[in-house]
Image 1 (cartoon, rainbow, N blue to C red):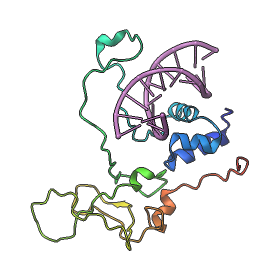
Image 2: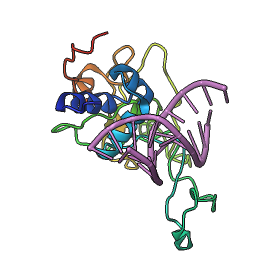
Image 3: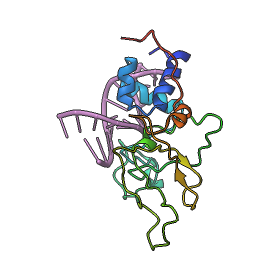
Image 4: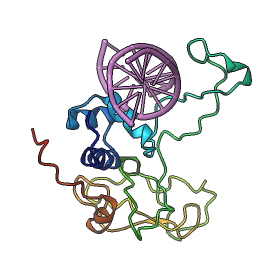
Length: 179
DNA sequence: CCCTGATTCGC
DNA sequence: GCGAATCAGG
């Protein structure tokens, strides 16, 4: 693989859009290993990995015959349904809260309904049909002010047009690889 | 067995 | 630096 700046740019773009490594590989005509390898080298933001491969946990593991045995099971650190990174300021260029944010419907802290002893989570369940609201987080999670954009999401996208425009960085127009 | 992504390690 | 091999989880 010839990692030109173009290629790297494309990789970053696709990565930011939340494609799977295999998909990116397919799209770029390279293997997923190449993709993940390069992404790793570029220190691209890792997306939720299915595995928890800790390396060098135990000091006694100085010698690594093949790979680490299977020590203990650490308490899952990564929520299967990634919460919205509400800290991202839609100011400059929040690369994109991609599919990670798109998937879950992270329960909007309900309006000033009533101070019921509700665990402050999952109050408004899913309301997909007919009103897919924008997933763009507003405010600090955990605060009463936290909510999601109420605009209607683009069909097929988790964000309203406004937020989609800042959520998705237009990938460079790569026509050379147009199959 | 399919998928996923991460790390390792020979090159 | 590269990426196949391998690992590991769903």
